[in-house]
Image (tube, rainbow, N blue to C red; front, side, top):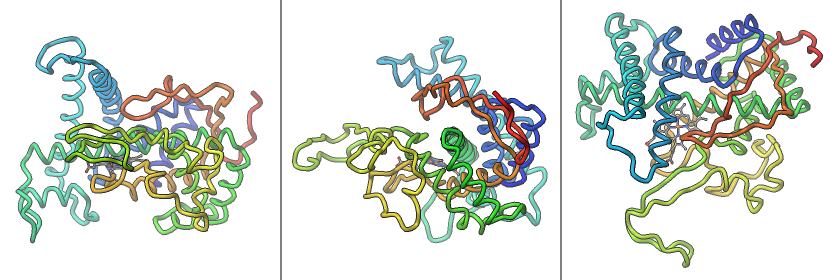
Length: 341
Ligand code: HEM
């Protein structure tokens, strides 16, 4: 995480101006590929990012249609979706083949190793079936996709909020200096980078990348003695609304990372659920919190962003919540004087 963030920061410094939406997405894709699958996606990160954006936009359009055309109909949207899918599946096939050509001898065990183990023999003591080739590809694709856009958007909203609250940003830089003193962050530091983690958590409250979770009722149920839900009905649980409800969050629109301080009262159940909850809760929660914390700290050591916060953030509530039109930023070296605007 640290090495890839440092590399990205160096590139951004050379470029001087970047779209943080694109750059953070590529960074978190590379982090997920490296950490989970031991793969280097340097050159494929951009095409994968484009294919993913296209696929999510087209899927979103399908979800909003009353009667979407079946996928086999060669409509322009379906053809675009097929092309995006082919790029994504091709990238995953290549990633798995990379490992088959050069097994990661001596490398720490990762998720791909575990999945390939499950291809050879199912987990002992379970009745899980042996994982087929297609299932392996789908698992890898799911983890890559679920694991990068969301974290990238969380980071983007955190940087946007920091730019709007320079006093919090200053405190964050001071924390990073105090805890790390100029050396690169490592896993155990994350617990001591408290404000970095709180900023990320508060960003996920105000701008939850997954802004709506759904569940289908398994049986008829009456909620709170008033609301009747029938079997198979779909219920939406909107993080965006609940996270901004003044009943649970005093001054809900204020950016206050200290809400997540260790000594602060814990949010009541289901009033803060950026990672969903229950049996289908996000499997990558700890990974995402670690990544959010470590990337914010590493960026704080390397760069400063100048973001035009007078421009309102136009949000696009697609499959994930994202800023329409990206997030342009000027980049300068940490410690160098700010440019006049
Ligand atoms: C800030 C980052 C992230 C956010 C906001 C997020 C949010 C979510 C949410 C809301 C769900 C649905 C949970 C539910 O229905 O109750 C989910 C599912 C999932 N997430 Fe994440 N996620 C993040 C990062 C990650 C990462 C880093 C990974 C992989 C390493 C990951 C992998 C998954 C997978 C595989 C599922 C499907 C779980 C299932 O259906 O059983 N996510 N995530």
